[in-house]
Image (tube, rainbow, N blue to C red):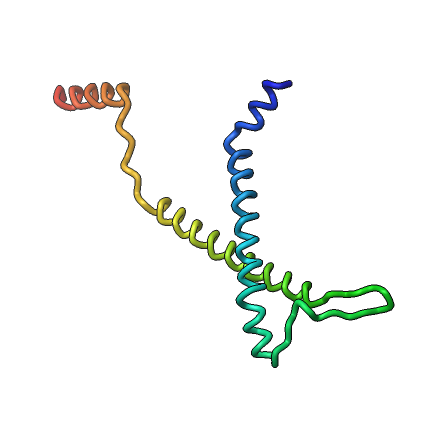
Length: 125
C-alpha cells in the first residue's frame, strides 16, 4: 500500500496539481489585496465615498454584509479574467508549436536497403 501511495504521490500530474493549488492560493491572496486595498477604495470614491466593506443590512440580530459579497464577486471576475488570459496565451503558444513543420523522419535501415535494391534494379533495366 505504501508503494502504491508513493507511485500516486510522485506522478507528474499530482505534483503539477499540488503546485497549481499552492500558486493559485498565493495568487488569490494577491488579487484579494488588489481588490480590497486598491480597486474598491477607488470605486468607492467614484460612487461618492461608499466603503463597500461596510455595506450591510441588519435584520434583528443578523447582520448581512453584502459589501463583502460584492468584493468577492470583483475578486472572482479578476481571477477568472487572469486565468482566461493565461490559457489564451498558452493556447496561442501551443498552436505556434503545432504549426511548425517537422522534418520528415529519417528512413529506417529497411527502407534504405529497399531503396538501394530498387535503384540497382532500375540500373539493370
